[in-house]
Image (tube, rainbow, N blue to C red; front, top):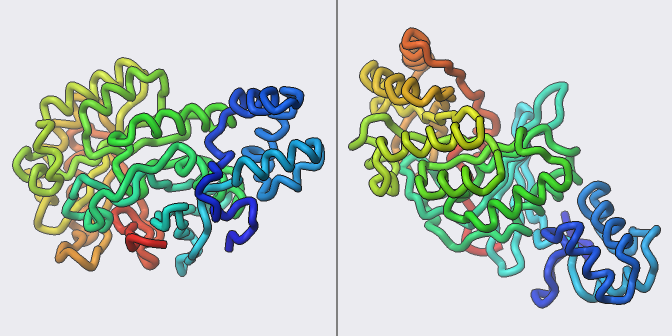
Length: 351
């Protein structure tokens, strides 16, 4: 557990050093009478070496370490709980925030490669998808860029630097645009390239346009729910604001602006969106915008009575897409036994 005094955010008046850029830290040093290059040393300690305490920074002057400790905590997160799946392919972490709220993050472990980190962007979520446990929380607040980046820093300490980062945890990233883009810029600064970062959205059209224009170029994944307009509105209530035609235009804009192919995340739910007609509608939509389709069998959530389709139905659905020349893959459901798979993250309102 994270109980170090420099990392546990017990003093709400002290901000976290995580979230500061190298330029920020160099400026801090200059303003407090130290050489600017010490700011670069602190940056390296925090983001590359994963320093947990200021007094570990032995190549930094003791007086600067004392100044830093009086001004900041290292992390805005406190580790409260962790649980590993039976297959050892996922570890779910619950972190407490300085205001007592909590979030969940997941390390997805891949044999022979570095892990992928699935991180949260909000405490809860306002979208209300009928196949997602997080929806039951509603939106409690946005995460700061510090809290977003700190998830990766903390998980890197516990595992190793990630192979990829997935904004697929709690929340809708494109409804927290300022902190999303700030975190993306900081990840780039610490050499975690946007080429290996995926931002998942339910289809927030203004956010897609804004992200395309931001200068950041992460991979974009759109959780569609259904390619039938009315069914999509039922599964993803917020989608009523942005019809499929507008969503398609935004996807095309993102592709043109960033030169990145957009993926469609499609959660298959038995008897809801897994028919031949559903596959044909999905193929028509994905084909228009040259999207890759990533199929995800529904992960059970206690609050809902949905079920995943069986293997035969899933394979038939996949085959129909392939017949229509759509590139398609099925995501292996890691962490379902510990409620860590897609759509299963949820916490109480306090840590």
